[in-house]
Length: 245
Image 1 (cartoon, one colour):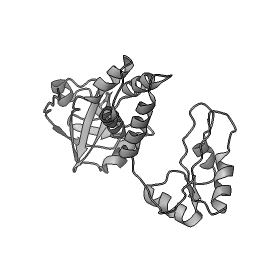
Image 2 (cartoon, helix red, strand yellow):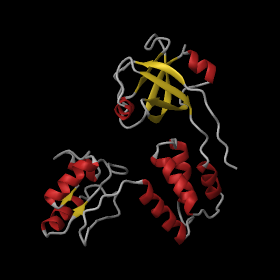
Image 3 (cartoon, rainbow, N blue to C red):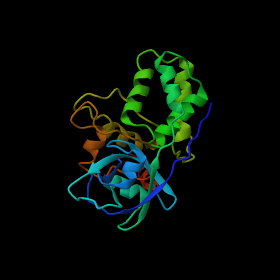
């Protein structure tokens, strides 16, 4: 059964506190805020924050000592960039809608088999940043070990393709390169990708930051150049150099 709930949206005036939480999306509201009291918002509650037709989901941090005045709201740097807000803009906050896909995650935790639509819904909610770290951990745990059948791996792969942005260059061969990772000093990508590109084979390579070692491929490459590229920038680099990292 698909249940939807209509939540009241409240408008608050934005003021930038200059807080950088890296990629974590955080919303700041004062402890005295009437909206927090009327809606039951508590610290770490995940809220929907909207401005000018755009919205995001952010974790609530409660401020004290007059850092924010009554009727004011603030955002972390990453959330500000995502919504393109400025001081004195009016933002709308509300409870987030219940996530139906969590039912599928719970089902998978109990060892059941999921189908394509269920994986589509889960991955789309993750891509829309609707999952908290706890929900993400639950999904990873549910899929770990030998808990997924071969067809489920295919369903998950297709769901990730559907949820992401796709780039096409029209070449007959587009190469990619992967390794196990997690080995300190294992910088094969920075050696292999330029070699492949120099041979005329297009190889647009995406890499992660450190997970289990002091520096991942992206961290190491960032010593030499910028690695945070938009899709348009990535396309430009690949068309010019035949590859990217």
